Length: 406
Image 1 (cartoon, rainbow, N blue to C red):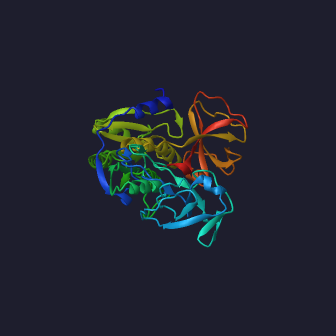
Image 2: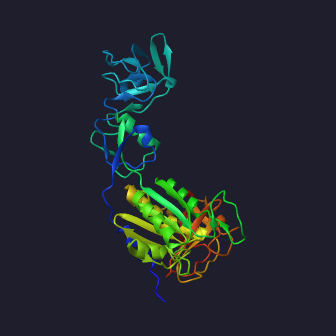
Image 3: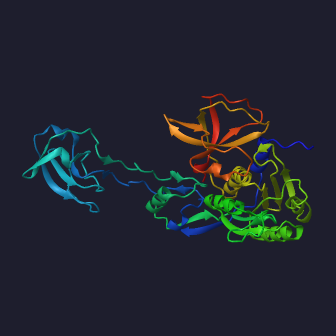
């Protein structure tokens, strides 16, 4: 029996893949939300460019706080440039965002003083420089504000808008084609005609994961288990996408034709077929020119776990993003043995309490690799490496946060 590849070795192989240069496109700023930035965004000016007020109040010289009264000589609205200057014994009423008047070094908030005739009396002193925004407080000219590979969110949109960037260059979306194979499986809406037929969810679950990761998807649906149908589907998918994902047909059964199509009909370079993990050890990954084929097992839980472990990092790699799988430390609340000498991914519940993640297995069902409902709720995957020891209650363990996938 052929020895299965170690999980860490399989990760090393896919992480070291090189693909063709990524294509780019320009989008209007707000249409770029969720896309991956293709260049460093560098400030072309200081923000603020001049010393400005951070509050409504009165611009003064710091030492004048010792005076009984300070005369108001002018008003300084935002968006205006006044000629008046602050000298000893006088102040200028100044508003949030206004340029600080020449000669001033401190702002007294309106709530820290009372107006008496045309003067102010300070009721609560402030430190020197209070509420004064220095040049470059927000960012400085030539500073790299957003790095290439960043997934654009609301904050990135706001910063780029402040730089007067109307269009932004992003990497084009990765195109992922998805299909499930099996003559016994039914798509949504198809009527069951015998008890041996089952409803497929794999192709839709994988599509949801790919879309969440930022890919553009092509849903190929259900493909019957025969060489001709699978070959036709995969040939079409390779022509139209960067990554082709199939579920089912990669085991050693008489009707598992996906592996035969990949190896014989397509002439793809098989990177590995079989990894020492549970669930999902029959997984097959191959490369055809600059395209990637990821063939997942047919059981729902297996295909979903493998899609998370192998498909998502490949989408991140293709799109040039800085995203990674959310693997963190957590404290376990019970003893947990390593049931097989494999890298194990076991569904658990996770919560954050007392400044750490804590996991338990309450309500999680034991059985085959088909139990997708174990991923409902606040789920995580407990990761046990094949060479690890049994876990004791209270120890820190590695988990993958499923609700934090990007």
